[in-house]
Image 1 (cartoon, helix red, strand yellow):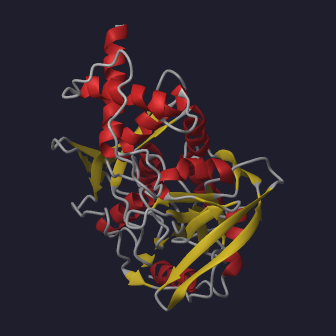
Image 2: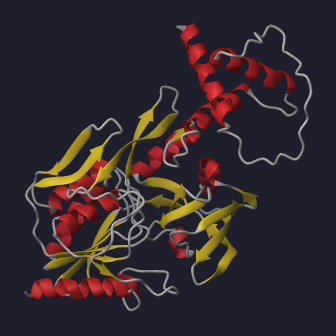
Image 3: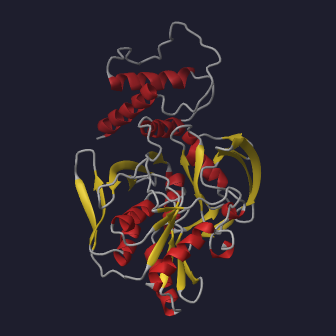
Length: 406
C-alpha cells in the first residue's frame, strides 16, 4: 500500500512539473545552462513518468537556491494538478482553505463580505458580487472590480486562496485593498479602500413590505439555511398583506444546488428545474414536485447574479412564471462537486454543465432579462432603502402592479 501511495504522489509531482501549474508568474530574468549534477541514488532514466518525478523532486531538494519544505512542495504539486485544468472553478484546498469554504456555505465567517473568482481572460481576482449589507458593499465594491493588491502585495487569480485568507481576519481590524475598475466609457482606474472587517453572519433571504400590497424578498446567496430563511420571509410578508413579490437576485453569486432546488419547489409548477450533463453524457433532471405558491412575482437580476441564482432565474423565465428584469447575468453554468479529504483538505471539481428546462445553455452566456433596465453608472447601491434611485426596483414594482391589478 505504501508503494502505491508513493507512486501516486510521484505521478502528481510530474504533472506539476509538466504543466508548470504552481509557477506563479515569476520573471525569467536569466537562464543558466550547464550539465546537471545528478543527485546520488537517483535513476537517470527519466523516460518513465514516475521515475522522472522522483528525479525532479530530489534534484530540486539538493540544488534549489532558496528554502522550501516538503509540505510546500506537496501542496504545490496538488494545486498544480488542478491548475493544469485551466478551470478557475476547480481547485485543491489545504485544510485552512477548505474550512473557509465550509464556513461560507454555512453562512458565517469573518471578513469584508465579497465573493470573488479568478478572471478567465486576465487571471485577475474578480469580484462576482459584494454580499448585501456587509463592509464590502458599504465601501462601494462593485461586480467586475479587480482586486490587484491586498496590504500592498500583488495577487493574481492563481493566488486567490491566499488572497481570500488575507482579506479575512478578526472583526474590527482593517485591511487595505487596491481595486482596478474597468469601464467602457473611461480609462481603467485604480484606488485603495481601507475596510474594517466584520463577522459576516449571512441572513441569506430577507423580506419586507414596499407598500400596502407589494412585498420584497431578497436572496443574497444559496447556503445551507437559505430555504428556511426564504420560507419564513415569504410567510411573513404574505401575513402583512403582500399580494405580489419582487424577488431580488441581484449580486447573488450562487451557492448550493440543493438550496436553490428547495426554493424552486416553492415558486415553480411541477416539472424540470434544471438539467445537468456530464462529459460522458450522463444526464440528471432536477424537478419541482411541491405545490407551487402562485403569488404574482417579478424577478430582478444583474451582472452579479451567478450560478444558482441563474438556475432559478432561467427556470422562472422558461415557465413564464414571472418577468425577469435588469441586466444579463454573470454566465456561470457549470457545477462543481466538493469533496473533503481525510486530512481536512479537500477539492472542488467541475463535473457537469447545467441547462434550463428548455435546454438553454447558461455558461458564458447568462440569463438575458425579459425587460432590460441598466442602472445609471453613478448609482452603486440598490434595494428598498435606495428606492428613489433604484430604477430596476421601480420597474419591477410597476410590472408587478400590472399583474396584481389584472
